[in-house]
Image (cartoon, rainbow, N blue to C red):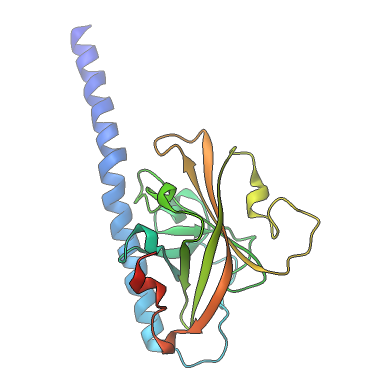
Length: 216
């Protein structure tokens, strides 16, 4: 019995080490690969086209198409945004809900990210405050959103990713953003939601938005 307990304990210890450490290592490698590939594609395609909208099929699961910058979480915080929110997709970056708007579009650009393990891009999303900036970078445009509300909801509250959150029958007229992750960090009994709206758009050719230098 003693040997059995020791064996079980070692298995559990190895599993914890895999979840807490190795999944982060693998995810960080995958995210770096997505980021590098996307940067290379953009460099090859250029940024001198007039349209600021993203050209992406909503079935391109796992494909990177943008970067999310959250100055509140550090000047170097930059995560690739990939299409899809399955477990494999979320190990490659922040995942875009395919049924929602794309960056800069009228409607709700909604994304999800792990708060623990698998790269944990949203590990410290709870530090984001009302009034903070969220910046989405595409090949030709920077989209700056401002946080309107931070809220804790139940996992079944899928209304948060509706075109107008909480108002399913209302036609969207604004460009919104919603970030979703688990709450508390080491559990999934709730969801932490960050809501915001678009305040500025500028071409990437004009350089980085000033807010990325300020840090909030």
